[in-house]
Length: 201
Image (cartoon, one colour):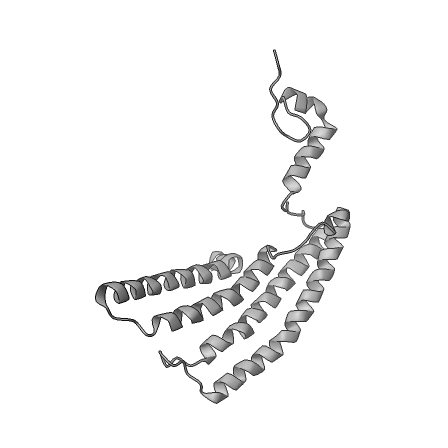
């Protein structure tokens, strides 16, 4: 049970998005085969694919938040020392959390209005609240992922957890090691940038 919970906690978004991508691929493959081989068009295929894509798009917000892979310009953050970076991230996560908490009630009202309207999709007759529930549930999931990262950054700030290496950190670690121990670089025939050089005979 613990292993199952761990997998869900670590890979929930990936699992759902892979399943949705597989379903979209299968449905559109059937649509192409049916249209060009059998001469029959599936009226529901594009609709289901579109709704799966909407869910995937909102799930990607939570995924990017959990993995910290959203588009950002980090030159400013790199100017801070390690402790300053952590404090900046905590502040940023706090603002993000407040933003999504602000959005959750509006997404709920949007979902509630859709349920009360009884609207269904034109091709499949699918209740539209299945689609309109994506913002509500995904914003809640994103807020939860932000809280997870927020506590993780606090543990790093308090020294209870080692800071994970980020993009560019590995190169920095290698460069610092070479600068501090130049004899290792000579032994390995490497320059300070970590590039192997060939000695002339």
